[in-house]
Length: 264
Ligand SMILES: [Zn+2]
Image 1 (cartoon, rainbow, N blue to C red):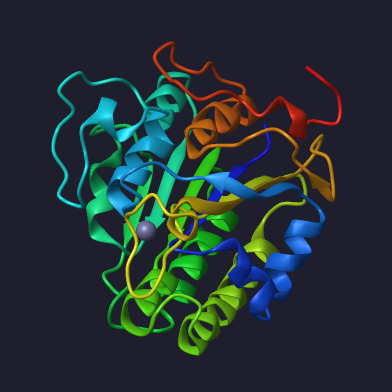
Image 2: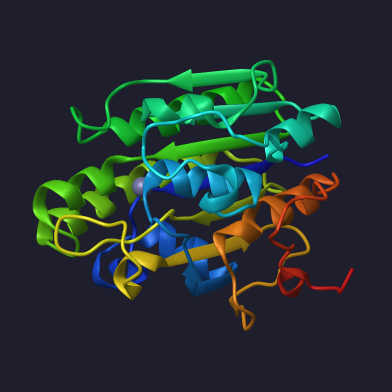
């Protein structure tokens, strides 16, 4: 079975990809089925978004509406729990601590966290290099790589500021390192969690709610603009398909069938 890699670059607006010079991201986009008009969830805040990404339900259902995590009132399995139950080896690499709560205890094979998202402009490179090493030496089935420094730059300097765009260019280098380490037959899903405006995000404005979403790999259409509407609720069902596992019946998103060369 080939590796499935899920890369999330926090706080990237689709128009930032065009405004910055990010050759690795553009090259990946060119070999992807992609949309630059996918939608986030409300509130468009990091932890609620990630809970929705991994559990395929909106914040109103999972109940995490701020960056302070709390247990779900009515728990449901997320992508990692489904994958673990099906015998898949899952690993997380991240530099924002609250993401530790995304998965049930015991469901990850490996987890790597370094607290550098506010302190080190090259923090994402450390995360990407750790993921690249692990992928090379172990045989994971699913790897999540979270890169958080672009969002930090947005909060400090403003979304679409020169500093914000420069940070995206820096992270593009880290992305290149990671992509170069992947086996050729890997499937890659890359997205953001939300956009931003001024020095914040969380609202229902298009600047906050619109995100890039793309998938590349064997059997995936290349340089293909996705026509249907994509929500970040669709990420877990799509990753489940790529992993060859079943979505949970309570998930509310759907696999984006259109990305596949052959209708399944
Ligand atoms: Zn975020």
